[in-house]
Length: 189
Image 1 (cartoon, rainbow, N blue to C red):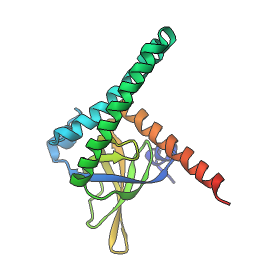
Image 2: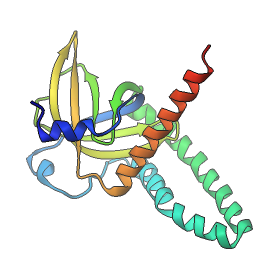
Image 3: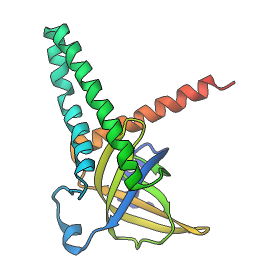
Image 4: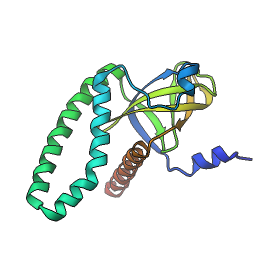
């Protein structure tokens, strides 16, 4: 019989995706801490902060747009310029994180293949760059399973202590990927 946690994980829609992913085991004190993680890479932190600020400012831009279309259009152009800088930054980060890999992603967690096993119950810091918008996220996760898959191991994780903004950014990414998959399916003969 599925546990409550398994039922919760199944509430989220999963997508197959290709993302840049790097993880590290958290030590005892780090694993128990509830504060946000910070990466040693100032570029990764900058990329993550850019996306969070963009997300948090969307409602302000809608209000400005209602009052002053010219100013709102100018701010949208500035935002696009910042997005371009973020994409260039992400390309630099991808060299550091490594080649993108296939994962199964939901708002509840991510599963991926790894060359080495990771014990169930371990706590991880997951550094992810979601493409194509180059969204950088550093999230806490707990390993819920580690299964052998040929010469690899399938690592299943559950996100922990997501902020509302992080959860909504993940949800937006998943919805965009779903829409892309539907468009591609309709276009195929």
